[in-house]
Structures are given as structure tokens and as C-alpha cells.
Image 1 (cartoon, rainbow, N blue to C red):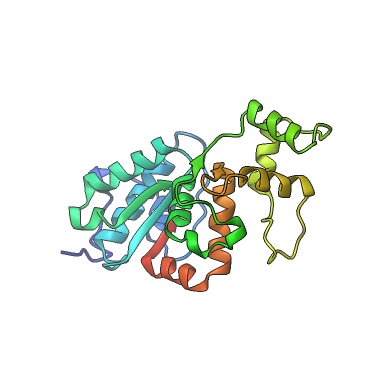
Image 2: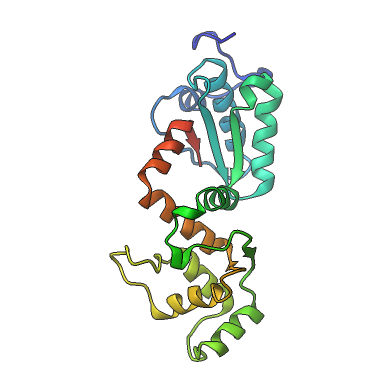
Length: 221
């Protein structure tokens, strides 16, 4: 049974300040800022419980929570699961940014242009110093002013090397993508590249974007 909005109370007898209650019950976008350990995760869990128990997230719609770390995603999911029925809690999905991006690439891989479509059984790799040095040597980029860590960030923050882009990307990044795609039967991808591919899928495929929007009534970041 669903609760009326006025009947709902914070789970586990938690006493929350007025601002927290307003954030939980607000139907607008909310930015929650507070120091570490101040209870942001708890408020997110309470908001998810509120949305599910009052029908503000109507079945079969779901809530998607995207976190940076696995522990945070698991913690949030467990709090919601302990406070809602199984029918309600199964509609709350808490995962990391990387997991969400990978799920999009795996499910909609064929929507990526053929030149940059990863192989079905691609390998996930990390751009460590050995990989970075090998790339620089094979592509004659020994003089670029990067450490492997800063180069990895550059890959994660860059635009795509796809023809549809309106903004050009540096030549060394194009060479890096080509280097990672050198084995067409076993593509090598970093999580930064997977994130770029996922963003491309959402930007260039309106039907896929609408399908995700129709699946989730609320998104927590």
C-alpha cells in the first residue's frame, strides 16, 4: 500500500531538520551540499524511500542513483532495501558512473560508428606508465608533456574523435584511440574511453535517450 505524502515519516525514527525534509519532498531539482559525514547519503536514502512509498515514483518507473565509488553505491542500495518492500526496492538502482557507462556501451554497442565500435569482447585496461610509454614510442610522441596520469585525464575529458564532432580534438588523442583499437578483434578500452562512448550514444541516439528517460522517474548523482 502507498502512503499519503502527509502520512510519510522518515524511516528508522530518524529526526531530520526542516531543510532536509524539504529536500526529500521537493518535486524540483535539488542540490545538496554538506561536509563529509554529515548525512548526505542518509538523506538520499530517505528521499528514495519517500518516492517509492508514496508513489511519487510510480510503478514500473525506477530511480537511478549514480555514485563515484562501489562502496557508496552499495551502502545507498542497502539502506533503501532495508526500508522498503521488495517490490519497491527492486525499482531502486544504485551503481557507479563507470558501471552505468559500461552498461550503455555493452547494450547499445551497435549504435557506435563502425570505425570506433569496440569489439564485442573488448578488454578493459588501465593507462599505466608501461602502456603510456609503449604508446608514445610506437606513435612517435616521445616529446609530449604528459605523465600517464595526466594523459589519462585528458582522454577522459576530451571530445570524441568521431566525424560528427563540431570541435576538433588534439592529434595525439586521435592517435591514442587508433592505438587502442589496433586489434579490431580485441579492442582495448579504458574507463575514460567507455565514458566517452556512452556519452556519444546518448547524444546521437534520441530513441535510446528517451528509453532511459522513460525508465527512470528520478536520478540521483
